Amino acid sequence: MKVIIIGGVAGGASCAARLRRLDEKAEILMVERGPYVSYANCGLPYHIGGVIEKESSLLVASERTFREQFNVDCRVNCEAIKISPDKKTVDLRNVKTGKVTTESYDKLVLSPGAPSIRPPLPGIDLPGIFEVRTVPDARTIREWIETGSLFLSGMDSYSGFQTVRPKTRAVVIGGGFIGLETAENLVHRGFDVAIVEMGDQVLAPLDQEMARIVEGYVEKHGIRLALGDGVAGFKQAANGVIDVETQSGKIYPADVVILSLGVRPDTTLAKTAGLEIGQRGGIRVDEQMRTSNPDIFAVGDAVEVKDFVTGEWSLIALAGPANRQGRIAADVITGRDSRFRGSQGTSIIGLFGAAAAWTGASEKTLNRLGDKDYEKIYLYPNSHAGYYPGARPIAMKVIFRKSDGRFLGAQALGEDNVDKRISALAMALQMGATIYDLEEAELCYAPQFGSAKDPVNFSGMVAAGVLRGDMPLSHWKTAKAGFLLDVREPAELAVESVPEAVHIPIGQLRARLAELPRDREIHVICRSGQRAYYATRMLLQKGFNAKTVSGGLLSLAHNYLLDGSLN
Ligand SMILES: Cc1cc2nc3c(=O)[nH]c(=O)nc-3n(C[C@H](O)[C@H](O)[C@H](O)COP(=O)(O)OP(=O)(O)OC[C@H]3O[C@@H](n4cnc5c(N)ncnc54)[C@H](O)[C@@H]3O)c2cc1C
Image 1: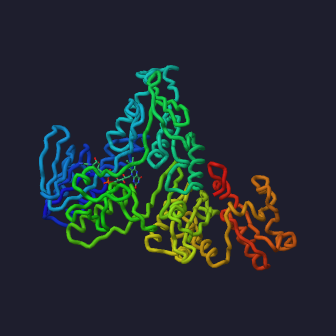
Image 2 (image 1 turned 30 degrees about the vertical axis):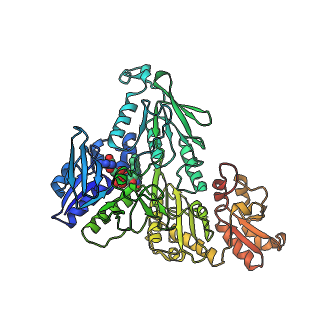
C-alpha cells in the first residue's frame, strides 16, 4: 500500500509516524511545501519574544528523522499542486527547481492546515508587516525587530547616550490567540504594543464578560486595546514607520505590524480533487476522517469537525485535534475502527503569568442556536487552600443544562492552576458528565495544590444547588432592577458598593428580617456569592422569596459590557 501525506506538520507528521508504527510494509511519502516538517508553530510567538531562544528548539523532528527512524520518504520544499482522483495520482512541484513529478497513491491524506487571513488592504505588503505562521516568519520578525528602527540602525554597539533606543512601537492586528501571544512577547522585548481588533472583545470563543477580565489584565500590563475598530489600511510614514489607519480614522504609528486576523481552511487541493466542502468552508470528513472520496482522508485545521456539545459543523484550529485526527486517519487506513469524537474547542492561552482557558459551549453559542435550556454560574474559588501561601482566585463561568444537569462548558481565568481545572472539566465534558458528577469528582488534594472542595467540585456543588432548588439564582441584569440585599460587612462597602442595595450584614440578618419585603424577590449579594448563598438559605426557610446573585460584586465588575449594559 502506498500512502501520500500532504502537509508535514501537526496532522501530517502525526499521521506518518503512526502509519509506520502500524504498518511496517506501507510505502509512505510525506510532502511539505515549506523548508521544515514537524515544527512547533505553537512556540513561534515565544521564539519572537526570546523565551525560546534557539530556532532549532522549534524543530521537533527533521526530514532526516522521518527518513531514518520511520522509513518515510519525506520531502520538504515539495508542493502538491494537483490531485487526479480518477488516476489516483498527485502532481508534485519542487519549490526550488520548479520540476514537476507525478506520484501514484492507494490512499491520500491531506493535512494542509489553514493559512492566515490576509485581506487586500491598502499597504498590506509594506516592509515591516508580518504574519506569525512559520519558522521563517518568526526568523524574519526577529531580524526586523533586532535591527531596530531605520533611525538607529547600527547604533546598538555604541557607548554613551547614543545607545538609548527610543521605545519601539508594535501594532498587532487581531486579538485572537496568536495576536495576544505575540503582543505579550513584544512587550517583553520592550515594545509599546497596541492591539487593533474589529470585534468588541479579544479571544472570540470566550463570552464577552469573561473576555473583559483578559482585556483588563493585558491593559494592566501595558497593552493598549482598540476594540470595535477594524484596520482600513497601512501607509509608509517617515523613518520607516508604518501608519496603521483604522476604520474610525485613528492612526497608530508602528515600527512593526503583526497580522493575526485568524485563519481559513486550505481547501485549494481538495477543490481540485472535487472533494466536498462543508458549509463552514472546511473539507467535509466523516468521523473516520474520510472525505467524500473514500481513498482520500483529511485532517487538521483544513477540515470541519462536529462540535462535541452542539453537534454543529465547526472549524477548530488547534494542535490537539489535528494530532489526534492524524492518528485516526492512520488507524483507519490500516484497517482499525478509530473514530474522532468531535471537538470541544478546549483551549488555553498564557498571558503575563496568568491563563485563560475554556472548553465546550459558550453562552453566546447557545444563544446563537436559540438554546434556552441552560443556566450559568460565576464563581471565584482559590487556586489552592487559602491558608497556604500563593493561592490566587480563579474566575470561572460554568454552563449546564437546566433540564438534566448536563455539563456544557466552562471558562476560567486566573494566575494559578487554571489549566488543570479546565483540563479536568474538559475530560468530564467528553465523558458526558453532569454537574452532579462534578460534585462527586475525586481529585487530588494537598493545600499547596487545591482544596478539599476543589474548584471543579465547587462548581458542581454550586450548580447542583441551583438545580435542586437550594439556591435560586439570579444575575445582575435582572437583579439590578429588583430588591437588592447586600449582606457584606460595613468595611467592605467602603471599597465597593451598589448604591441601590439595602445593607444588612449577614450576622444581623436574623434580627432584622422585618426590614425585608415579603411580596418581592430579594436578590442577595456579597463579594463572591458565598455569604449571599448562606443568607438566601436562611431567608428561604423564613418564608422569603430570595435569590443569590451569581458571583456577587466580583461578577458585577466584568459583567458590564463595552456599551455599558449588563450581561
Ligand atoms: C503561531 C501559532 C501558534 C499556535 N499556538 C497553538 C497553541 O498554543 N495551541 C494549539 O492547540 N494550537 C496552536 N496553534 C494551532 C496549531 O498549530 C494548528 O492547529 C496545527 O498546526 C494544525 O495542524 P495541521 O496539520 O492541520 O496544519 P499545519 O500544522 O499548519 O501544517 C500544514 C502544513 O501543510 C503544508 N502544505 C499546505 N499545502 C501544501 C501543499 N499543497 N503541498 C505541500 N505542503 C502543503 C503547509 O506548508 C504547512 O506546513 C498555533 C498556530 C500558530 C501558527
